[in-house]
Amino acid sequence: MSHRVVRSNTSDGRRQAVEQRRPRSARIWTGVILTALILPLAALALFSLTRGYFYPQLVPNDWSLRAWSLLLRPGSEVWGAIVTTVSVGLAVVAAALVVAVP
Image (cartoon, rainbow, N blue to C red):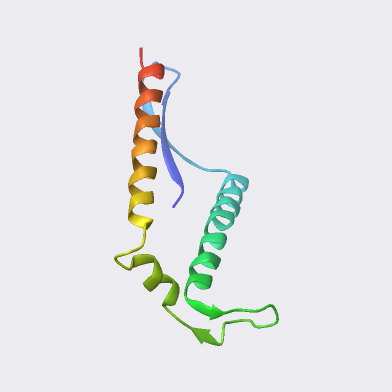
């Protein structure tokens, strides 16, 4: 459930735990944002497993792992690109931490 515990003071100065629910609009917006993030990734995953996928079809007729086999073959330069991407990402995170943390 989407509950959270909030500490609040009572009228006599004691602290008590009060359970609050998120507003319905917050839950709806969370669902909308998650859907907007997941659907494009699901479409990419679907396209990566097909040979040909054209507009009027609801689901592809031909399924294939050809794209993945080309991507993961030993001669492919994808692994070098992945290493470069991760290296640049780690360098940016390190630089942001140096700048942001006093």
